[in-house]
Length: 447
Ligand code: PHE
Image (cartoon, rainbow, N blue to C red; front, side, top):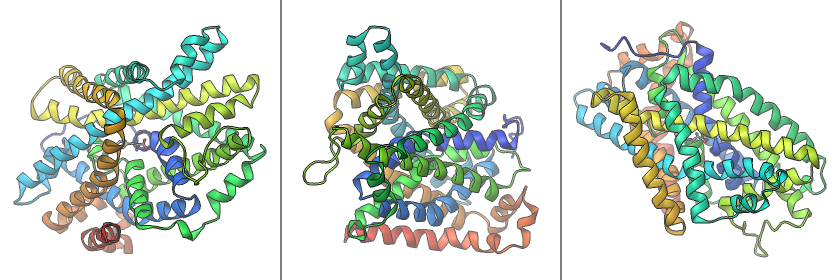
């Protein structure tokens, strides 16, 4: 399209790491383990993997393809693939953008907790025990302060633009995070009680299978891959024409799923180790206690068992997780900012501040109405909005876009695709099979 001056990621690996940076975040270390633990373990894991494979991956390809073709912000990209229904494309772009801002408004709160757990042990070591305890105990003021500590850096990174901001951060730190994970998994598996967690995580107990479990697993898959809220579309618009979309998408999905799986391998055993050491995890009735904050009692309990090394490992872990959350948050903020700079012709600086400010205000409202709003916003945005919007994007592309055009864009950068089965199946699959699958999931739940 006309807009050839747009910034691009400077290398394919840079793009993969940035997109993986968006995907890898609280969804992996907080959302996935919490959902797995509250939904009976292995069954959730398997349904989740299935959802990633049959729904999230094909729709990830769709979002990247639309974005790269449009080479613009999502509002414009969607309208350029919507054939004669440009208004519909614009509308979906706007709703997706709202979704991204809604997610960021609760995301910043949880990420703030990570910041708290990162600095608290250091403060204890330095003798500021009171502040340290305050940082770890749930209160509105503490949630607000920590949320701000997270939002301000997010805004500053997005202000610096994609190559300087997003790419530089993501590419260096994700590999370190993965290594640290492996070390922690090995450690936890040797602790008393760990095997019970491992069993729950890997041996399915079919009695837990329910329609709401499947809906949650679908939502979690979309959340974890950053789908349905135009994030991957914006990133697609920065992707070079010589990159293979199906391959790139597969790498991103594999990295993200690998990290989620490893996080489960850490948290599930860690829960049972913590329980073994006297931390209450499940109620008498088998319900997870304080599920939102579960990870935040289990992990510090684990670091405590590590002696003095625990202080260092705990700090490194929370620091890397804060950065992983930051690379996700900047991808969410980038969506409305890209729209405002291109559609309203505002400077990046200006757009970042007013949009970031509005999201921070929304976040503060959630903080002060935590009981009523937090769970509601999480469910509405991740369980419903993300899968449904993700599907609608693909349907717009699948039904309204000219078939030859979509195939041409998909195959750009991957000439080897030309005569494989993948390219013959994919368009029909997202047009017909994906909507049927999603209807089945929601339909089963409603019945
Ligand atoms: N995928 C991110 C995570 O797992 C969250 C996210 C959702 C990011 C939607 C962007 C858009 O933490």
